[in-house]
Length: 82
Image (tube, one colour):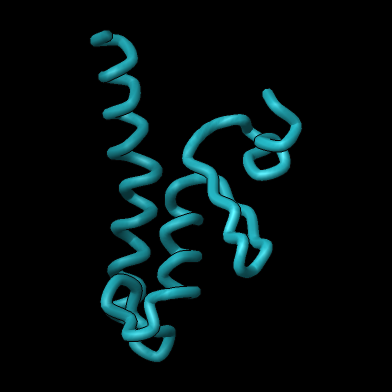
C-alpha cells in the first residue's frame, strides 16, 4: 500500500512496471507485454507490426486469453492449494 507503488499500480498488485526511459507506468501483465513489445521489439519477433494485421491479431488473442482465462485459474489453484 506504499503510495509510491500505488502510483504505478493503483490496484496494488504485481506485476507493475515503470519504464524510466519514457516515464510510462503500467500494471497488468498483458498491458506490460504489449507495451514492451511495441516499445522495444524493433524487429517484431514477439508482437507483429500493425501492418501484419492477421499475425498481430492472433498474438493479441493469445495474450488476452492468457490474462483472462489461464492465469486467473492458475492463480486461484495455487492460492487454494497452498
